Amino acid sequence: MGEQAGDVTQMLVAWSAGEPGAEERLYPLVYDELKLIARRYLRRERGGHTLQPTALVNEAYLRLIDQTRASWQNRAQFFGVASMMMRRILVNHARALAAGKRGAGARGLTIQEAFFSTEQDATDLLALDEALTRLAAVDERKSRVVELLYFGGLENREAAEVLGVSDKTVQRDWRMARLWLYRELTGRAEAGAARPAGGDAGG
Image: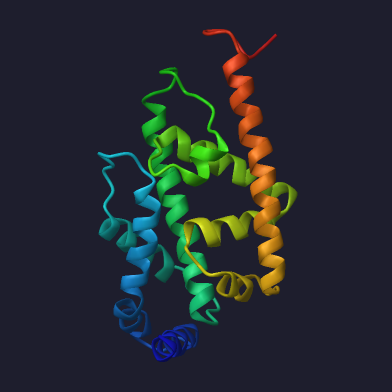
């Protein structure tokens, strides 16, 4: 694993230096781990999802190689950015699906569903994404910790490397982020349940 990680980092540095064909040679070295990240994302989607892990990996990689001015430093950084790309792709996909279901019983998302459910629908993913966006406005690093650990599947050490902080800081941010999201998601779910059916949000 250490040797492969070194190969990935070496190839990323070559890519950043503009070495021709470096991104093509990198692909087979990172494909399996990218597919694992994609499966983690899609595992939380309810059956019948139109995206497959291979398609998600391919689209994310195409976006990554468009990062012509990216300064790649190591594998942890690369997989952190890849995780963010996959989240954006899936959120855009979920947004398109949710647009067709607007008014069809959208509901709040509980923290149990957000972090422990094995299946989520498009509105679930959007609710979690919107909560993470609100968290980023308050504390961007904590939002990134959730993205890296929960979605990207990185270890604490790898997330710490990406963010330039200590392992203990990542652990503390992860605990605090979960508490923040718990309050945010359950509060909105309760507000949604209390709102009269068919009632307008405006006064």
